[in-house]
Length: 542
Image 1: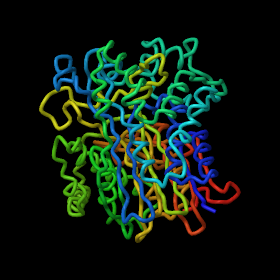
Image 2: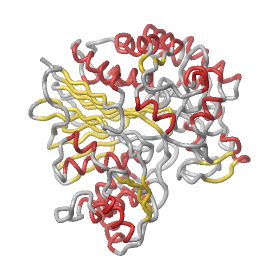
Image 3: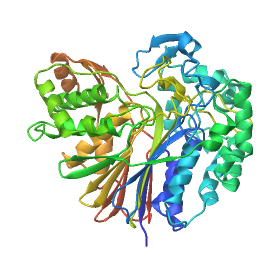
Image 4: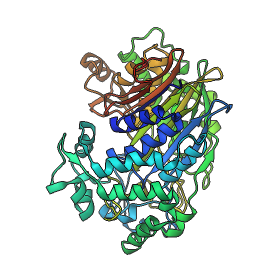
């Protein structure tokens, strides 16, 4: 009997994947089914109008393959479209301020979606055990029938706090669009835990996509309905942009840590940042330091901010600009960074665009391993929806520089990255598939989880649950409340500014172990884990 494991923050999505295993499906099909359900049960974070980055391996392949289903700038977007209204940078590196937040909020912030084409590309790599419609049906049914609001979804309404420059809050977004307001702020308030959230329009759209296939969203009646709405409200995406959209199969970037081989997302994704973190810390003597003690966390913070500072100025769509991946991820480059740390230069810099995503990882005993990160941008995306279709649109335009002439300036067709889905090999065999949500914090979350497993020999579940930190630049370190107060005080005495935060990404990981597939879901999310057969172990073992 084939055994499989799947992990994601949304329990109903994990259950959908588990059912696919029970029907004889593979990890590929289980991951696609779960990702479609995630769009329904986490509609403020992901969905049909978003992006996807996918890392995938099959037993017969010598290495994983990466599928770039990022969003793309619409053909009506002039490179200087926001130039005259440019106000500067927000306090969050990677966010650009324009008058009225037009690049963050509303139809001008929407980019050509890639998620559905991405799921189609993933499914084509499988062996056709189950069809497209069967994998979409669960999502359609849940959208129509509804589901009880769970705590993780409720936190999406409150996590970001009040509206601030460059980051309009969820209430401002949803309140400005009648359809979005009526669905996701019923009666003008946040849905409470346990209340049933029904999305009948979304359900009907999913039924049409189940019957008509992905072409329905890109060339069919759904596409025509979308773009008619876009044209009426000044969006930059056209029917031609949807029809021409293609997923880009790209060779993943490859790195090593100790005796392991890692494959992660190439630019415009953030795998290069993750591999740089690992390179930088690889030759630091961690044997004599206490895990999550001040010496260890100082080294982790230094590695993360060095990687952000070194890599982010170069990351963009490699179709438009040159990205020096080999130089950025070289061991020699990391050696130079270690010297900087020894001299206490405080080397730092920018950070990746912030965003809210979700992730699903899956594996099975026939050698299929899948890692999918997908998103509609920041919480609630653009905050608008076409009323008869029922799903929110992405808002990734806010991550592009409104000024011309920069590596991340606006250009029609240019893609936006995000996420670092990663697969770790022991020898020639895939071992761990991992990914996370949380904007820039997802990268440092994956980094620390891998260190927990590889260096400190933690179980997969303990590794994803352990307290984490995050540092992007300067001497500021974000720490979780669970971190020891004594450790935080010790870091303060070393000159670091410590800020307590309750969000550090949300890891989802699976592993192929001698006893079978294992899964671990971050307790910071809804902890969706699916295992088949159901009566076996494998939760969090690595």
